[in-house]
Length: 571
Ligand SMILES: Cc1cc2nc3c(=O)[nH]c(=O)nc-3n(C[C@H](O)[C@H](O)[C@H](O)COP(=O)(O)OP(=O)(O)OC[C@H]3O[C@@H](n4cnc5c(N)ncnc54)[C@H](O)[C@@H]3O)c2cc1C
Image (cartoon, rainbow, N blue to C red; front, side, top):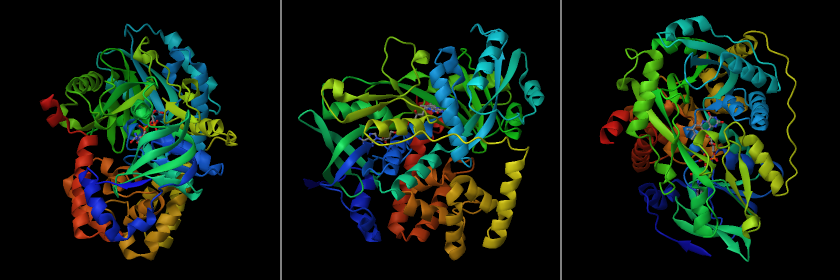
């Protein structure tokens, strides 16, 4: 079956009529009537991880994403790669052990994106939560013991932080180690590129309308291509619903008797573009703070993208709300601001320091009888065979940290032969060892390529093993050597690579998720126009497309990274 429909979105309308003009349709042929061994619906970190594992195991898979890869919950997280210290309080030792193992795997396999980070636990002496210093020390001891690798020695000068924060709150301080992935969008893009190079068919901006279920077996999906306007059917041996907070929506559209699986919990963050004096020690020591909000809930303050990420909240999300439109309420903003001011002092932070705020929905298992904090953060692979639908799996919950494990488990469940990757035994690195090796590498590549050392370093930080391909593309062509915007160390070659190897199509795919410079502290509308023009020239877009891309990007940016003054005033 092949039906052509008019697309409803402005972008869809534009692309339906202009997409072919740039000769790009050859790169996106119709998949109508094709058969796959598995269709994975949802291109967040979990769906991409599943597609990658299945493709590596030699399966012919199709990955469908209605918007862009990592544009959902994956880009709205706190971005910590952690064992989950607080899961210990709920006695979930197996989850902590699994998460710590996955943390080490990510640190080894993606050390350009996932970095060790010191965490300082700062708890009021009289918090009323009832944790004694002894209980906390015992918990931290257990956390270290459960980790498969030795912790590195903290680099942070903790005394400076303690002095900066101790304004009457009578905090007690403890240290432990975890990790940060500043850009899970990049991690997702790398896994995506691996899936593609192992034969996976990939479609972003393509929505699965329903899962096809015949005679009690899931056997395909009806897809709407939001770029070309085409609607078509594809068939498959297995269908995996990895749509995070959207899981119930597609299940119910496909078969009304499937029960509710997701109990969405909204989490919001504030991003301060001015680092308060109390947090400078964190930035200098590449450390994060784990503390209590005004109501005693756990909360993080983390240096991120040259700013301070502060969050999160936990609010039950109405099942009928569209997860794509989630945003922080005025109450959440006030709560976060009050908690930050209590920590850093009210003279240090105000609403004017909030660059933007964003929200995401944790797709936790539906458990109406439990408190939100107590609901497991473990993922489930829900097999619908129990409801009379064979070969259909819904993914429930999960964390960035454990997405790799989830992908392997799911691939095994559909019959792929996937082993758990061994953890290498790594000798602890001498202080500054890796940093100085990297800086020597950057120096020599800079000397050979004509790029600056800072540019080489910035490209290596985001592209890891593919950095040399980006640098080679820049070396060959003066246009590709140009920065995306004046003063940035990120080059047009990265935008070009994003389109050709990481399936980026729209300006937002490039600037928010493949080369996410628009998340940074200085981005504004002028930067958007400049980037659209430069990227457009490099990719051969005509004037009309450049204008439409810039406009659509500003709409997407404003919907994701909310300006709090406007928002708070409205609520
Ligand atoms: C506030 C917050 C903080 C968090 N902090 C951390 C943290 O610090 N560390 C950590 O490890 N984890 C953290 N998490 C958890 C982690 O972010 C999520 O568990 C993870 O990103 C979920 O990924 P996913 O792929 O399942 O879902 P998503 O990233 O939401 O991906 C689902 C995708 O499916 C697509 N989709 C939906 N419907 C369709 C359809 N019909 N057709 C095609 N595509 C469709 C969506 O567009 C979306 O891109 C946090 C989560 C939240 C909300």
